[in-house]
Image 1 (cartoon, rainbow, N blue to C red):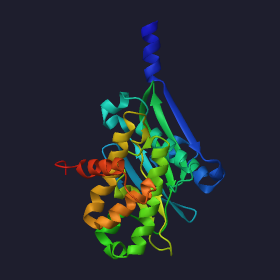
Image 2: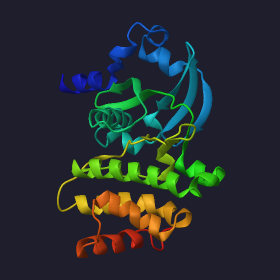
Image 3: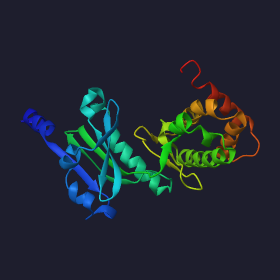
Image 4: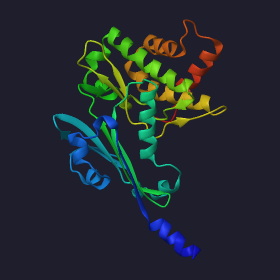
Length: 262
């Protein structure tokens, strides 16, 4: 009996599917009225990773990004606690609660068998007129040659990082490609995207994670920005005019974090 119950448990499929209240009754909610329909939808292929594929979709005059997770492709990750897709939608929604600028979550859900997640979906609104910072560094260098533009973006990134860390949260993948910037407005506004690995940490582990986040940001910054611009970022982050001994020690750790690992 127990064995039969376990077999039934692991073969029982459960689907979780949510569309945020703002989109209830919209053309998007009517088109994606269930998980399977959303997962099978064919959009414009954008990119993929070992765990996911991203598609651009156009509905009722607006663009969205449909991220599909197929967790079964990495078998070991099927058994390691909460799925990446669930962590990502929870993190993005929590960022909204903190009033951090993020890609707006529209719909999300997952399919599980037993405790194993097999598929997942995250739909976000398109961030119009934006590029990620890595793309800007690669293809739009003129922006990085404008000190005022750099300062405005740097201050916003520093503020976002500080708020997350003040809440004991580490992004864990705080790279330039995960920061979008509105390049068409008079004031460049940033947005955070892609945070499936972020989580809360506590002492004595939090400081290491903070250093890793800041080192991820500085990994590209050291090639694109001046030393004074990088120092200004840290001072904005730490909200200080003069570096303390603790700040200097942390900065040394940030600079050395990826030494011999690039």
